[in-house]
Every structure is written in C-alpha cells, then in structure tokens.
Length: 261
Image (cartoon, rainbow, N blue to C red; front, side, top):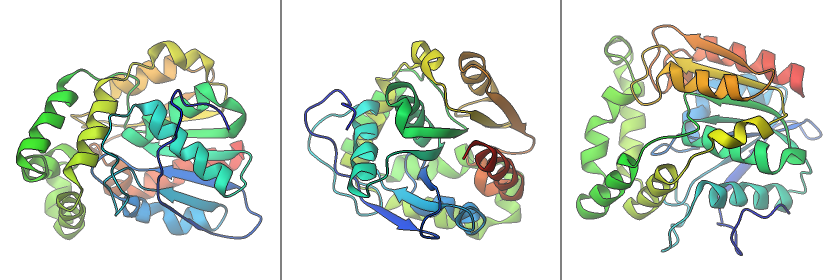
C-alpha cells in the first residue's frame, strides 16, 4: 500500500454497493456531512459502478482517534479501504474535503486512481480552519451547524427544498466534535498547490458559482494546475452543488467517469 506519511493509517468505515465486477468508484464527502450527501447521485452512478462510500473520523459513526491527522492520513485510510476490498485501482469523486483527499491520492498514489472528479474544493485553505477546530472542541457542533445552511446552499434553494437542507444540517449536529476538529486541522494544514502537476488521472473540476467556501477561482487554480483537466462552473449553486444542482452535477460526473473508466 502507498505510504500516506504516517505508520498507521486511519481506520475509516465504508459501504460498498453496486454491480459485481463493475469499476469501483470511491465517493468522498464534504466535512460535516455523511455518505448520505451523495444520495442525489447514488442511483445513477450505481447503475455503472460499485460505490465505495466512506466516513471520516467522527462522521457517520466512524470512531475519531485522539490524535492529530493530515489530508495524507485521511487518504491513507482510503488506500487501506481499497486494500481491504482488494481493489487495485478505482475512480474517485470528492466534495470539498473529499476533493482534497482525492487530489492527494491522485498525486501520491497515481496508480490507484484512474479518474478524478473534484467538486467545490480547493488545493489550499487558510489557517481559519484550525480556529474552527478550537471552536468545536470548546462549544460543540452547534455554532458551526447553525451557520451551515448559509454556507452550503443559496437562499433560493433553501426556500425551494428546506427539508433537504434541514436533513443535511441535522446530520452535521450529530458529528463527533473531536472528529470534526481533526478534519478541520487537516484542512488548515494543507497546501497541495505544488502537487497538482503530479496528477495524471483524467480530471473534471466542478465549482458552484455562488459558493462562499470555495469560490470558483479555487477550482480554477486546480484546473490550471492539473494538465488536461476541465473546469465546469454551475450557475446558481453554492458549496453543496451536488445537492442543489443534482441533475446537472450527476450528468457532468457520469459523462466524465464513463469516459475515464
């Protein structure tokens, strides 16, 4: 297995579903969400791929180890899952933190990633994320969950489908603060801009035009750094574009993955 930079990989929980013998597609979530965030795409993707959906520490019941970890550690946990399921190589799609993990995998374990979809993500974010880790350790998930709807969804989508918004925000309230804080520190300690040129997997970058967390210029940095990649900006979408613009994102990812895989 490729070395993520630490002796023992994180133990991540996961589910594997889909047609036996089909190519495996790994789906990485955004921080604060569970594997259910991919439900808008799952049925369409499952028709062509075996879906390996994993959880971060503290998310979706996955234990949170009492130690700091990095994006490389999270990626090492994904590699361990691939090894456990005897998957030599897979396609990968990730939202936000999931995309950061995907960049690491494609740059440092290129033989394991055959195609890459990066949605509403970044190669570098500032140290404000370490401050968020301090916040949740001292006050729990309520302060960040209370603001999540405004970061993840446009006002128009909140009015149009509040039940979907509420379900995702409520799931965030159930995340273990220690696991969330560890993921925050992984984001705050990340700078993968110099690694983008090492990515050789066919890559599609998707950005939400109204995303305040990772605005489209973040996607532009990634697309310029990965040779041959394409950037698609989804109008009217915020950070969880795969939820608010589900049909458009599903079609874009499916077309890209079928061509890559």
